[in-house]
Amino acid sequence: MERKEAIISVKNLVKKYDDFTAVNGITFDVYENEIFGLLGPNGAGKTTTLEIIETLREKTSGEITVNGFSVDSDANKIKRIIGVQLQAAGYYPNLNLVELLELFSGLYDVKISPMEMLGKVNLQDKAKAKFKALSGGQKQRFSIATTLINSPKIIFLDEPTTGLDPQARRNLWDLITEIRDAGTTVVLTTHYMDEAEQLCDRVAFVERGEIIVIDTPDALIDNLVNSGFERKKEVKKANLEDVFIHMTGKEWRADN
Image (cartoon, rainbow, N blue to C red; front, top):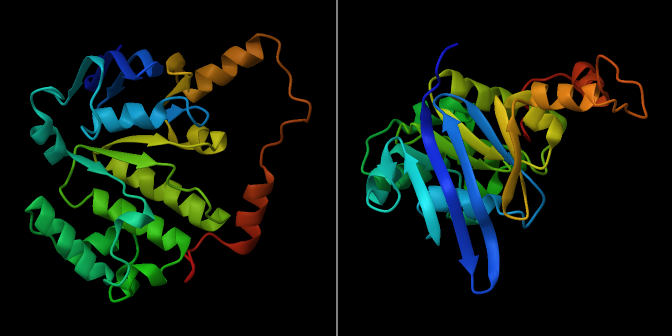
């Protein structure tokens, strides 16, 4: 069996805030060139864990390496090889997309072609549009484009499809898969289990600051079925979202 290389290694990670333990001894690896999902309810510790890996928040204890670099001693080296998706509030609303990409490339101290970056997320026709004029789906696609500016080895996506319509959501799934297929490791959080099932090579369930299981979506589902679990409703070969996409089309819309 092929041995997979860990590009992120987290061992016994703990984060405490006074008497509250947000992350309680988490251990997991993310393999190179996979889509890894960190799943769990709000307040479970997912975002805290990711921010510590991204060197944006200090840990209480534990060890974390990213591509062989320690968060303790090599934070600047880690920042150069990762891309972190900003939420909409992180952008200057009155700059157009080309201006924003030029601004971010300057911060990263790299030279890019803004139109080439926009082409990766199918936003070439919005090059001169201001960020605040974009639809929700367009804003999410642009935020993903900004994670790719420094040609990162790993990108982190925090609930990338929340609030999007079915077309925009499915197209964003395709985009994330294409990014992985091009050689970038993707770590994401989502509350949509169908999204995690479709996209992720492996998932970890986080509950109350602890990981309760890590496996492939298929293995987790098979284990549940083999335990005697039965759904109340018959499982069909398609779902209502599939019907919606089939009948309304999957092309990018002007407003997504």
